[in-house]
Length: 228
Image 1 (cartoon, helix red, strand yellow):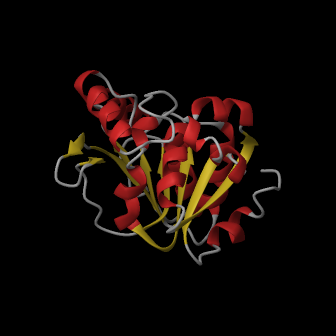
Image 2 (cartoon, rainbow, N blue to C red):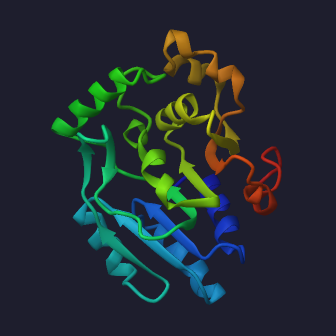
């Protein structure tokens, strides 16, 4: 987890308005940090969804399930019907804060399928598997878990961030916090017909997504231009 993302998550999860948290991708830094905040508050629950048994076990060794959270193993796959990548876990409730830091880099046939999807969906970075493109459908996946004031946080993953903005900016609001991306580097990653994206938005390391009309992110985090 990027240090700016950690700062954002600490602020969001320390808020009294935050009770239910879900993170895609369990981590030795993020999972204990989020669970600790809930314990300190004396309320809240963190659901960590992990697609690799190795990482689930490794994090669970230092963070066993308790009343403040648990880690579950969930298959990450391409759904031919929905034509999207997703975890096989079906959300049963709405969450206040959703951290997207998964899945890990795809390998083998999964990587081949992802490159094909990136090409078909006219991804702004083409079919490159670099820079976290494996999370392009995670916003679509977590939508059923969002209430009107839910906040989604994307940890880096610039490839997915650019894809999200290109495909969801008409229906969701995007805000950026932390260190700014170098425009020259961004333009170097974007396809020729999408390079204008680098000039249209103030891209930074942490992407915060909210539903139209919600200002909860602003109440907790403050102006995106302010220091974390």
